[in-house]
Length: 218
Image 1 (cartoon, rainbow, N blue to C red):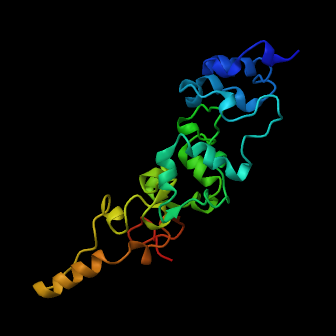
Image 2 (image 1 turned 180 degrees about the vertical axis):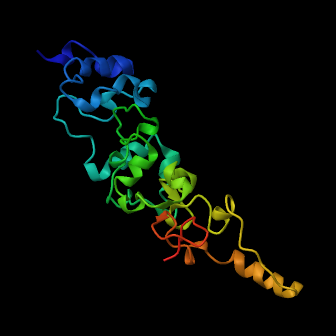
């Protein structure tokens, strides 16, 4: 039968539209749909037909390289962040939103594919995961303590420019000088120097330091 003569799908509320699809496209048939009803998209009245063609194959309305544009229609704040100098290469089509997110729903926050932010990040950035004998404390907690995932005006997607990011947790090196003018020059030099110029192994190291806390310098 011609479903178009039976149901005016376009005028149905979003949950009803998706329910019709889910009668056939069940979690058993399509594994990534098993969390749909609890996902943030379903909760916010996004329906299957907002992204997919109905009965015209599994293809999205846009090609995979252009799916970011579909996401950006709703997530305008995220779209703006990708215009910042440092960003993941989503606009360039080198990675896609669904490399990190599952739009059909997950048991984790932010529709992440990994069980946590750290698991999602290290799926690509495995060299930052370790294990290391001496780990940067934030590495074992949340990458978002230092980085923003979509875009930033700072290098390496940092939330704050170095050294000010480091100084939020760490004390700066002490400056010992008898001259006030010399101290002023030293302070200025300190704030215009990146901690990572010396501490390049910022995510972790296997080299012990004299203090026993790990030598984050290569």
